[in-house]
Length: 391
Image 1 (cartoon, rainbow, N blue to C red):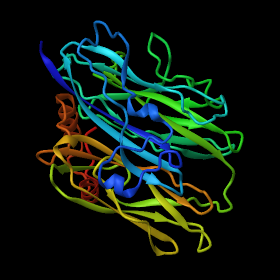
Image 2: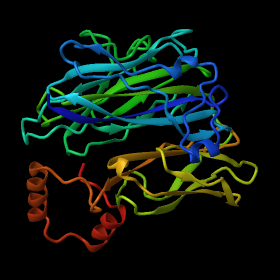
Image 3: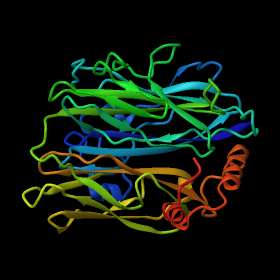
């Protein structure tokens, strides 16, 4: 039997008061405390579809993650878990973490969740290699102002340079991707998702909570309708009233929002996340909340002046973190206003380059260079500073 190494990485967000990690636990890479959720000690990512014969070599890994991020002011604990699973070549199945612990929502008082993914250990038809699933993440909860259409963008990265698309989760075809919160009935009327992973949502009642469940898929070409893999993104949306100050806080800094930083294993990375208070000295920034991954060290929130706050971040990637890593941040002020999500990517390799572009990307890049031989110098400098990956 030929066994193939399969790497799984999943990030979970919890209510801080129920799962209160500490900075010491984060630094020590300890598992989250289970609190009253004792099932987390034994809960596994179980096969739910095409298990026989599609998952003959699958041993379900545990789901309890390591502590990675906390924000007491915002009320969130974040954990991430990575596992290596060996699967026979040809396995093709769906697996899920299924439980019932969504907070009370506007559409249902108590709902089950099903966080599922499709795993296929089959060579790609274009290069004979195994596929790299896309990496996607979003912070939770996201606050949206009442009666105002709000755009939420889910950042996605794909190491193979594949075409990626988003869709609503479903519970059809024998695969339950969303438990008791399947769109569109679980969301406000008129909520829209676009293939580029942009969501437009409007909440009509202050205090309402909604669970958003989507699937991110990668395709071998822009015209293909058969996904290579399917990964879940699920998060909470909270409808809030208008803030006394019309200007929400902002996140700034280096890395630039939306950028990709190539980095090598063992190379130290140090930077800062800057929060801007746009509402005068009577308002303060209470936290820069983050969603990161194991090994990222975040400093305490520091007030530089009444309008500028910052947190330091540092990290040295390990060989277990090869590929894409995504980090996001949000600023929160004392009026309970929230900045837009600020995300950036790292691509960890052994040689310090971004993902090696497939042949079709190289061809497209050469065509662009031929069409635009005289690019402006400041545009070149800007691209160099942003280190934008080919994704």
